[in-house]
Image 1 (tube, helix red, strand yellow):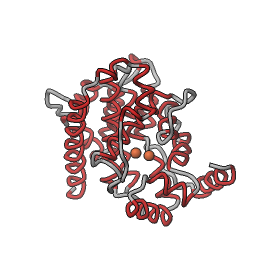
Image 2 (cartoon, protein in one colour):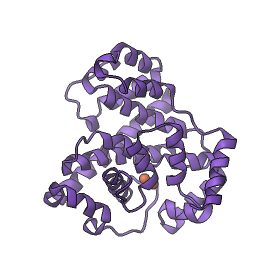
Image 3 (cartoon, protein in one colour):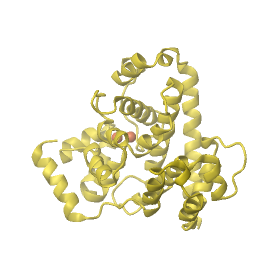
Image 4 (tube, helix red, strand yellow):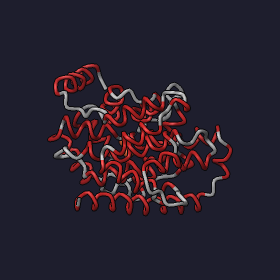
Length: 301
Ligand SMILES: [Fe+2]
Ligand SMILES: [Fe+2]
């Protein structure tokens, strides 16, 4: 992005003041997380989530979903906080808050499409890290979930252009970021970074947002960026993309992100691709079922 475009984008963000604020419940949960574990008040966390009945209901549904691999039934927010821990609860609250922030956009992507892609990328990023033996694997969920937050920014700040971008990308089966660059002079990576800074997100999440369509660079959390890059691509090629088919070939071994991870983590070379692909397809089916059930419940409540 050149200086003039960067100034335009920053001015637009500054003038409009209509970028969504980080939901208050998330700010409070993030503050809780920055304290020592023994200082965190479970009562406070339970109260924060329970205050919003719809948020609490969605958190419970997710906590009980097969995607989060719960063995026993979780009947209350208190049980969910105790069973999953504050960090996972924060990730769940992010997961259910994100599509609500998107609900007000007029010419953007359908919230259900965006959410399937975000949730799919979060889960596959975390699973990818687990299969490669990268620790701690939990940190990849949030990076995957928020990597495309700039799509929300572009749909809010440039609704007319973004509607046209989406249409042109769909028609030409081209990656969204290529059309954004051509029409706007920047992509959702740059605008997402601005929102990430406003929200004061963790640095590795910011890097995933800004660099997930670029080759990994040693200066910017290369492991997180590489994992999210591959998870995003796998989602787009396996039916959890932006709601249209992208004409793009894929050969994992020739992807620089894969090569970077394979050089650092020997487990990559032993990865059973057939089994991994089978697992990804299982995620895709469950993500669709979960997102559809939450959206259909919202419509009827
Ligand atoms: Fe993206
Ligand atoms: Fe994406």
